[in-house]
Image 1 (cartoon, rainbow, N blue to C red):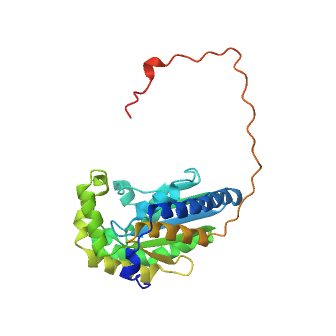
Image 2: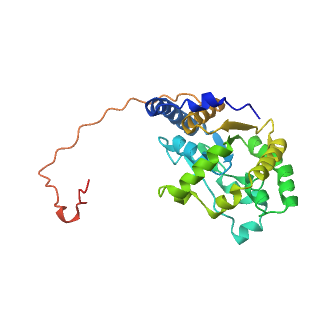
Image 3: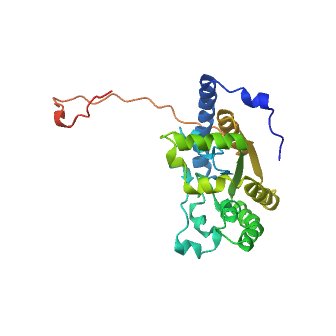
Length: 268
């Protein structure tokens, strides 16, 4: 794994004003990527993995702020049903892969088997090792079908993970982010580290490499990942016809209806 930034570099937080300006510039490029994908029929699949509290949701939210959910789709599957448990493991993910003109973002993916399922005992060791053996072949088939597969691992420090999980416990706005599984898995830091290392060794391939982003600094992480994502796709700026608004029609004595009974109270 690449070296972690120095503590001094991590402490130098971006101001909100600078962050929002840089993010706005990246949003312009994401819209260009969106329009290019629709015009070219590109198929892009982005996978986000990492420990609980690593910041995956924040990065995805930053990506999605200004793009169309018809082109950019976020997939975050719940626990498998009893029927899905009997399927080929990756089968439940296949229907969500992108078609032409789509960019699909997986907020956790088939790599659940290599991480949380292996560490928490939801699959056998034999099943986990079989997955690690088969995943590169499945991903090669995806790439050969025309999908551009981009995989990110967000690496958070143990201290920052603790701080974020404690926030989820105490902040009423964030309690929904904390699941019983998060609490159970919190003390298995090194089990997850070993599982991560095995996953990288088996699935960091030439056709679908892993990209690691240190995520203690949320703002920089979001900017860095979006910038990197844009650099991975050979998109172009698609020209558009200039649009001019037509004049509105005349009222022809139309009278506005009275909605007095249904007005939302102006509390604020």
